Every structure is written in structure tokens, then in C-alpha cells.
Amino acid sequence: MKDRKRIKRLNPLRAYFPIFVLPTLAAFIIGFLYPFIRGIYLSFCTFRTTSDAKWVGLDNYIKAFNDEGFFHAFWYTALFTVVSVVVINLFAFMVAYVLTRGIRGSNTFRTVFFMPNLIGGIVLGYIWQMIFDGILRNYGTSIVLDSRFGFWGLIILMAWQQIGYMMIIYIAGLQSVPEELNEAAKIDGANGWQTLRHITIPTVMPSITICTFLTLTNSFKLFDQNLALTNGAPIAFTANGAIKQTEMIALNIYNTFYTNANWRGVGQAKAVLFFVLVAVIALIQLRFTRKREVQQ
Amino acid sequence: MKSKDFALDKRNKPSNIILTIVFSVISVIYVLPVLVVLMNSFKFNEYVNSTTFQLPNAMSFAGFNNYIKGITFGNYPFFNSVFYSFTITILSTILILLCTSMCAWYLSRVNNFICKVVYYLCVFSMVVPFQMVMFTLSKTADTLNLNTPYTIPIIYLGFGAGLAVFMFSGFVKSMPLSVEEAASIDGCGPIRTFFQVVLPIMRPTIISVGILEIMWIWNDYLLPYLVLDRKLYMTIPIHIQYLQGSYGAVDLGATMALIVLSVIPIIIFYAVCQKHIIKGVMAGAVKG
Figure 1 (cartoon, each protein chain N blue to C red):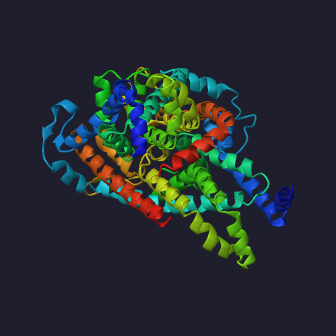
Figure 2 (figure 1 turned 120 degrees about the vertical axis):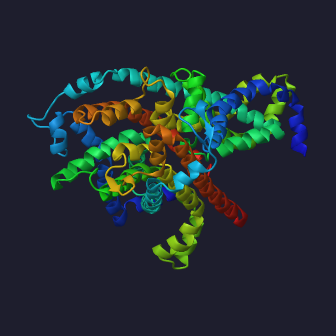
Figure 3 (figure 1 turned 135 degrees about the vertical axis):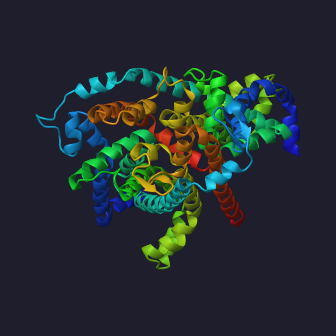
């Protein structure tokens, strides 16, 4: 209440809406709000460009649900997400744990492990494509010939890129563990594993939540790396058409839009479904974070 | 003094020395991919695939041929892409920092109904994946002539406003009111108060947000690919994808040379701002 009065004293600020907020708001409407609302509307239409939209109701959604390729992309993405979340967080935590024990060269290691994070997805994809093909060539195959190579290749790529990022967050979390707690545990005769299990992990739980959800959404929304590394190859032919074996959801939506102009409505419907999925993940995350705050 | 001795003692424990050695090996493996790219950028195309992990020898050594080839390859000069990448990144980052910091300050200080609506819309936009708006956004940008490197910053401001407003608002809420009050009692109008009092206090957050925006925009592929008029303007990621994606049998050596050229600015940026980058990442992560 008192704050309100104090803000009132800054009252002339209120009249400055056009200068302070309007530029951002206008750009926000152009760059996000209008395209978003228009996108929802278009998911119920058939269209080639945005001006010739014709209302078709739920037709696009039915087509999307009957699209084998979309389902394959969904399960492929889900599997990829689970594996990458586990791999990245496990290694990132281990590295952070060692680097906070005060070993020689910690800062150099931190710098090195974070470096790949600054390289963009497209460039990363081509770097690793060359490396994998350089290895697989000795066995007479290539990353685009077997979906297993594509899957694990993308896992290795993502791990290389993201371990450093998550490591930074874990280091921050581990440094906030009070030294007295560790000492108390030592005096009480806890061994290294017990200290880790009962002191360290519970205290860095917030970092674990943040990193889990960051890797979760990063993997789920992955596009650039997927496009550059395999672009969905290899293709399996089924009775109803072709399925790209290593195509993830984001790439599937993109290909639906831009390979067949008659399917743009379906692409938009898939995009809405994708948005709903991501929003659900975000809501679950919010609940997790809230719960944690209550406990504290 | 005592604690320092203790720390030294800790570092020289045998188990920690072993860990240092293990991590040194891992670090070397970690930078290996980049070194392999550098190595292959000096090899002729046919040797990149067959002898990927060997140093160039007299037969395969191509000197700077790949660089010359890569720069002039295709019908679009590589340095134009470099120029546009820089232009877009710098202009967009400046625009985002300026507009969203002003916006966030106003939103958290005035905090009436409209402000709350705008703020929650911004938070909401962080959740929405780009595929949701990509088609309609590129059409909107075309209609409004926002498809050049000099106008695309407006699109970046719009699509990137969410995170920036969120981070700035979080900081403004923790800022003491008394400084701004003092300024207004001394007769500062809101604009002067913002630029002379609030902005300097915001400095650490400005750096954090700026780092995050630079990392995002410099590496972004799909947004500029769909929004920009592709015949006239490319960025580095678009250029590399264009060479690799559209020509089936592209010169791998030349691509490696271009990748090296595109990684150099990143390495310089990292070397100069390392501390800020790591701080920025931590600040951004807390957004949750």
C-alpha cells in the first residue's frame, strides 16, 4: 500500500505510455500477437497464401491425426527428448560436481566445456555430419543411411552442445550448498556417496528442475540441428507414403508447410497441436517450481 | 591465510590430481571437433571424407584454396552474409535492449490493468514455439516490408520481447524506489529519470539480456530464412545451409573453410566477454 503511494508520486510517468511501452507493444503485435491469433484461425482453414483462406472446421486436425509421419515424428521426438534429458543432465551434473571440488584448472575446463554452446545449430549439424561420416565411411555406411546413427548422432551433438550450459547452472547450484552442511555430514561420519545423496542433491534440487525443463524444451523444439545433421533421412516407404525416419516434430511441421502448398492448413493445425504440447510442459514446470517455493 | 593453505592442500590431493589429468584429456576431446574442422578446411574436397582424421599431407594440402573457393562459391558473396549477420545482430540487440528496458520499467512501476495484461502476454509468448507463427509471421513481415536486414530488428523486437521484458521486470521489481523518487523530487521528468538514473542501475541486467539476445540472433536460422527476401539478403547460417542443402554434391572443403570463418567471430566474442556470457546464462536460466 505504501509503495503504491510512492509510485503515485512518480505519477507523470503514467502519461508516457506512448514513449515507453508503445514501440515494444507495436512490435510485439506485429511480431507475435497478430501472427499467433491468425495462426489459430488459419488452422481451421485451407489456404495457399494467407488471403485465400477457406473455413473447413476440424478437417485439418483430422488430417493431422491421420498422418503417419506426424505420429512417427512425435514418438521419435519423445524418445529423443527422454534420452537427451537423461544423458545431458547426468554428465553436466557429474562435470559440475568435480569442477566445484577445487581441482586444478577448473576455470579452464569450464571455459572449454561451455564453448560449443555458442556455435549455432546449423553449423554444429554440418561439423558433426562430417565427423560421423568420416568414421562411418570406414564401415561403408553413412549417417543418412541408418536411423540409429541419426538418432545417436543427434544425441552426441546435443550433449556436446548443451552439457556446458547445464554445467554452468549446476555449478551455481552446487556453490550455494553451505560448507557447514558438508562439514557437519563429515563429522557425523557420512561417506562421499551419503553426503551427495542426502545433502548435495536435495540442496541443488532447484537447479535440477531448471536444467531438466530447459533440456526438455530444447530437445522438444529442436529444429536447426535436426535439419543440418540428417534432414530426416533415411526415408522408409510404407503403404500410405514415405516416412522420414529421423524427422522431429518441428521439422515435420516445417516440411508439411513448405513441401506441399495444399497441406498448409494441416501444417498450421500441427503447429497448434505442437504449441499445446509445449504449453502443457511449461504448465507442469510452473507447478513444480511453485511447489518448491511453498516448501521453502 | 589458513583457508588458502587448506585450498592448496585440497588441490594437491592425489585423487584431485588424477581428476585434473582425466579432465584435461576430456577437454582435448571436447575441442577436437573444432580442430578437425580447421584441419579439413585446408584439404582438397576429395580428402575431407576419406581421410577426415589425418593431418593434411603433401597430396591433400590445399592451402587457402578452400577459403577462396568458399567465399566466392555460388552466386552470393559470403562476405555479404557476414555483413548482414553483423548488421542484424547489432541492430536487433540494441533495439531490443532499449525498447524492452523502457517498457519493463514502465510496466512494473505503473502496474495498472493494461500493464499487467501486456506483461502476462509477454510471459506467455516465451512458451510459444516458432513453428506456431512462422508462416503467418513471414507473410505479415512481407506485407509490412519488414523483410530487409534494416527492418527485421522490428520482428526480432516483437518475437524476442517476451524474455527481455520478463528479465528486466524481474530486476526492476528488486530496485529501490527511493532513488527514482529522489530524482523526481529534484525535478527530473520520467525520460531523464530513466536514462540518467534507472539505466545505469540496470547495467548488469542489460549485459545479461544483451548476451542472450546476441547468442540467439547471431545463430538464428529459420526466422531470417523465412522473413528476409532471400534473393537479396542472407545471413551466415542461411548461407551455409544454402550451400550444403541445395547443392547435393557440394565442396566439403569449402564448406569447412566457411565454418571456420563463421566460428572465428564467436571465439573472439567468447574470449572477450567470457565472464559476462557465463553470468548472462545463469541469469537467463533462473527465468525458469
